[in-house]
Length: 186
Image (cartoon, rainbow, N blue to C red; front, side, top):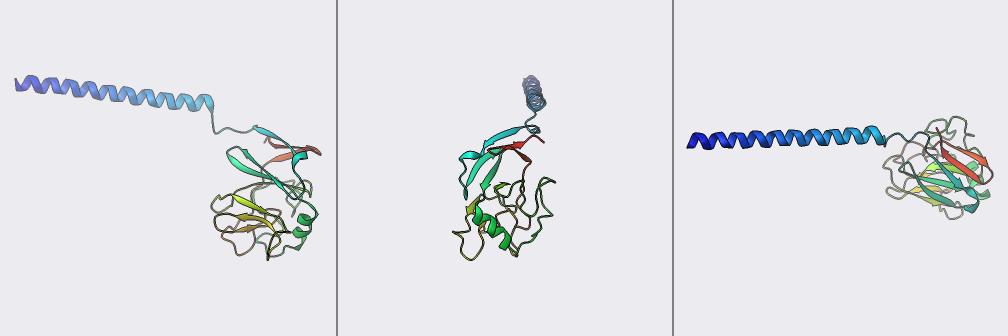
């Protein structure tokens, strides 16, 4: 009787193991097929059209694009004057950093009045707060990291002495007319 009981237990265990292997195979097949068919990491060519006419001078528009926060800043005269005054930057010429090759440096933009940056600090990825030069105390304004208080100027260049050591990245974009910006298309 004991041998019959052991034999039945082995049959149940083998059956359970076969079901587990079959289930794991089905799960693996579903994961591979969903990746192959949807290709979630492939975002080349994904574009976003941005209307610039509703962004007042001295303000910014926050966007979510490719799972990143983007800031489109309309730099007024005070912003542009503040850029000329900044000297204590890690990379004042903006020669290093992630940015399109054909940008006007050191402004890091195609037009002086517009700046497009990824709105997350370069050390921890924290959200950035826009600080207008008129509201900045003891500095020329720009971007303030909400986690550590790190500072970037109005062109997204990191100030010396900050935890972050890199300028804010600038995504691929183009200005198609005075009121339209297109993100992406790379």
